[in-house]
Length: 519
Image (spheres, helix red, strand yellow):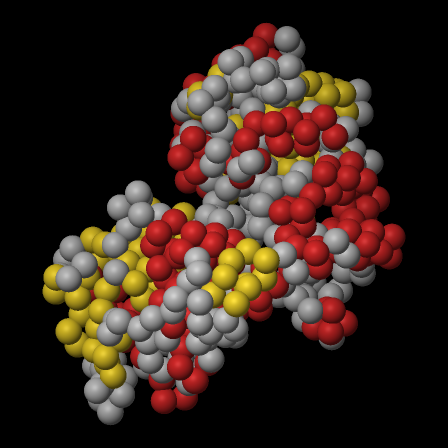
């Protein structure tokens, strides 16, 4: 059976005289929440209570609860779906693992979710605990987990739900590269998402289910490939690439929904900043007659649910213990003062970039790159607590890996030093490379003597880079990184990476080694 998205005049003509058979469904959806139970800033990182009171914050579970309840009230037939990656990203996850996510999702009334790669970050056992705690099915069709005892009787590939007298099929997908991105262990074998999805579609159609929604933690581009490579899927609810879709915003990556090969594809960015709302009308053969909607911004206009806000505040109390946990030792004070880290090579910049490079040393990465403005404090000699590391790196930034040419890297360095006389936060701290800067020269021509791995940089050569997700996505003027090749922005938290490197190298002795020469 071939499914079609009937649009425009053709849809109106075909639906004339059979309106009684049309079936309308509101699909509410989230993805890549990453434990952002508290509100976030415009940079997707922590946002203080003061800023929240001033209306400067977004998201958080309390706002999301209000928006979900309001959206449910607008529809007499809805489902609430999640595109994966509830795990990882804040101290809430470090402490509670999946327990708080399960509690909140149950309260919000989720219908189903798919497994994201980060759901495997602490192995199949932690994922199993989450699955046992939630009151809805967790789906994953493109993996063989029959050899993994903790998952073999917990996950399902697809399911059928009854909605307003009709059967709706739901299928889940996880990144084929999850074994490289996370820690699923040796007993979970991932496969191409398109054939796996098609197998479940065929199974559902054979059971008489002709309305099929794919929950795909595969990324926007892979979702388009799946739409081209399969038949029978009616809607794809995506995740993984943190894609912002909006038909009324030129800054969006595409329209909402994006229609590929007749299949509406939606995604709602990440971190609870938006709630997606797609209103779909089917005919009695399961064809989509209409699909419209958009992302709802969780800004200050969305009132926070008092009960949820109180619960998250209560859940935050034990996190202070984590902040007080000793994670390493410093043999000497590590200088991270902004007057240094935004002007010259600084000790904290070397520590952070060395930690970055060490974490991804097996991934073909040549250069580590950190904006000086992301370094917010020094660390005293002696015991180092997690709270101290979080004071240095408070923004919940994640590791980003990508590839750029030497010419792009040179442009990035020029941007980094373009406002150094103003003490701008874009000043670059680096590892794996050295360079000379002349502050007296005109911005755009201040950089010289760039070396990568001890050899002069080559303009046409492609280099592997690790940075933080803020810089990679254009923060601090680094727009040249936005179109980088093979970008992956969802690595571990930079503070965790730095703390683990400190512990491994301890007692850590800070140093400078001539990475940046200022004329």
